[in-house]
Length: 238
Image (tube, helix red, strand yellow):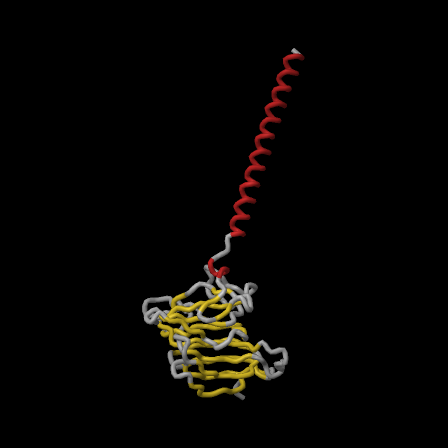
């Protein structure tokens, strides 16, 4: 009886050992498969990483990357962000701010491109497309639009100088209203410290809140004509 029990447990241990060996081999094979695939994925650069020149700009000079092109609602233009690898938005982005250095616009009718800014020596901490009808329920910050009647009428752009000598008190940022095709740029505030936000009340009424000299200010600007109606400190009624 003892011999039978010994033989039974011996077979159990052998089967368990065989199962463990199979599991170990399977795990090793899976690890090797994953390592090879990861290595191949890393070795194969994305198309945008292989770009060295685009629209007359040497990307290698500052190690810049061009993101995906996105449509601008109600226009024949599309645009793409140019940014450094650390700020690069990449594919599938919702268009959230990423310190782009420039924006590239492409006219789908003439098949010609142009840059928003003449150089890539600045940062763009934020930019937002202004839509008609206005309001968050209609459109998206990336300019793609949220409904069939959505039309981009302008872009609120915040730029920052890359100058270490810029005064922290006066600010090193500028606010601009840009036409939706990226061709007409109108500064609405210079040497500011940062953008607090904005409210697009109606097609011709945009309120931009920002910091200048440590104080909060508000701009009343027409985003269509890009004319500033008023620029005053934010105050309460007494």
